[in-house]
Image 1: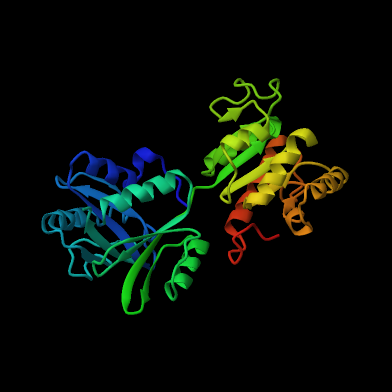
Image 2 (image 1 turned 120 degrees about the vertical axis):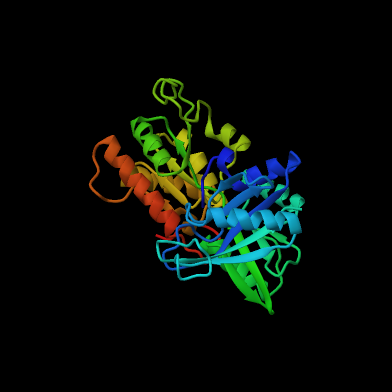
Length: 109
Length: 235
């Protein structure tokens, strides 16, 4: 049960941005292992210009998610991303806390 | 995700209705499930479990990979009685992440000076609750000591299945309250859900300490809910 103000709520912001004619992607944490910083169901909303709101990792991998989200907005094809500890993955970024997360990125149509 | 589904989901969240957004991770259409909707098996079990636990999760059903993202309404506390305990409880509960509303028809008690910044309504609960009803994600705290004010909201809270119902008063006061509520048609099982005397037994004496005892009991009820039952806390 989250209790965040509407002005900071990624799903409310996604709706507002979309209504304003901006292209929007939504990233969602769908799985976590170990000490993941944000629980499953957490959202990050990204627009076609790279503006974002919300959090899927408390700041560790947001940059990479945003880059992927721009591709998803372009292609319209959803993607599943996985992040583990930095250095151990193919990604340059990672979770320094040692956890692992799966993030689903999709376009709002 | 479909924009229309997002709009509908946000409307449900504003209306404090529990909902699950089921995302097909292979790219199929999304599905919005409202608590109480009929859902086919084997999905029904997973949906029920996610509603109860409040924990979103990815599930494999019939070879399909779904993410069930659950949106439960944030918990409210409705306090009947603009008394000294309520002044402290409102502050503490706000810090703990609860939305607070205080209702008291006695205008001498329900003054903005005493409750700065708090959602305070100086009117009878019977009228206020018609406009803004209690729900399963609400804790009711009745602390006026006055049956004319406390009894109605307590009965309402039990009927709608508030996750916590607490009432101030000695054991003797509470015994006569139970007698009155029985005449309102409430069952023994309903009445057993009232936390009275209110608050965890920590020997609280000052208003602030009593507020701690009440808030702790509300949190225990919320986190320890009997998730097999749609109605109510376990004791």
